[in-house]
Image 1 (cartoon, rainbow, N blue to C red):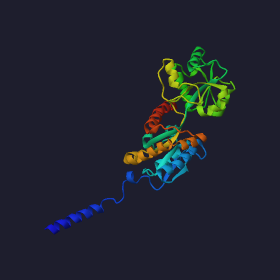
Image 2: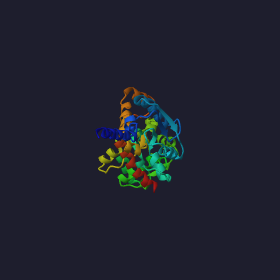
Image 3: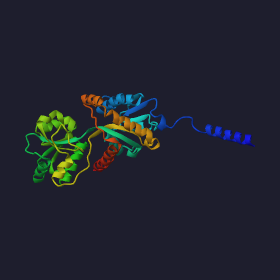
Image 4: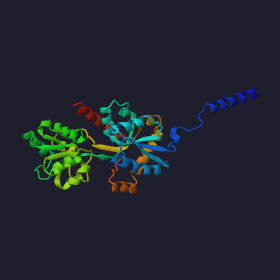
Length: 328
């Protein structure tokens, strides 16, 4: 009987072993032998340059090669769709302008994806819109500009690119001051360069455009406010919400102009949280590498660490703003 019991036990163990996967879980084996970064925009642009620089450094940190592929078209929609169809096992990541392109594509097309299908890791390079007046105007603060707009509706001219976050940030600021679009004369230009030239030359009184791009005309303008979480070392101006607070007004959502960064499949984060955290930790580590940060700054590439929670918060809150204005 003893021999039978031993034999039965041995058989049970062998059967259990037969039905137990021989491979370790993805959490234990990640990273895989190869990782692919999908850029949903064309080669050579800011998102592409950010993705390639990050891939080159991050592959050393992770000890696995990272390749970069471009899937452009439809304002990012083609690339987002391509990424969503790739394996959600941590072998593919979306390294692109994760905002506002994903949100705008969802609002413009019948997308099969939602924001909840992405696990945002970090918004590394953020363009924030700057409210800047021509240097010859008398306005020293955003409050002064808005008071003048209220006193003489339609007299002051503001240049924007139609459909841009700058155009939306202008409307948010006007609303915060209790004004509507008729308080100023909005002059639209099809490029940021043309809109900046207009304010630099005095054809308009103010512009609301990406702060980084406006550095090229810094000597011709006076900054009044920055639509960002924190002030910029490049511009002597308060944040938009600080300017609103100075006037006793309620704050508005921080609407980022363009956020280049990294996202995973939400399914990967849900099913393999430890592996997802490994990528988060590795990404944060490379942005704490002073030599790498200096290299990126030399290439005019942003180096901000927002982390998953703050990045997701910005994108989701901004989506509601974009959704509201897209319906108008």
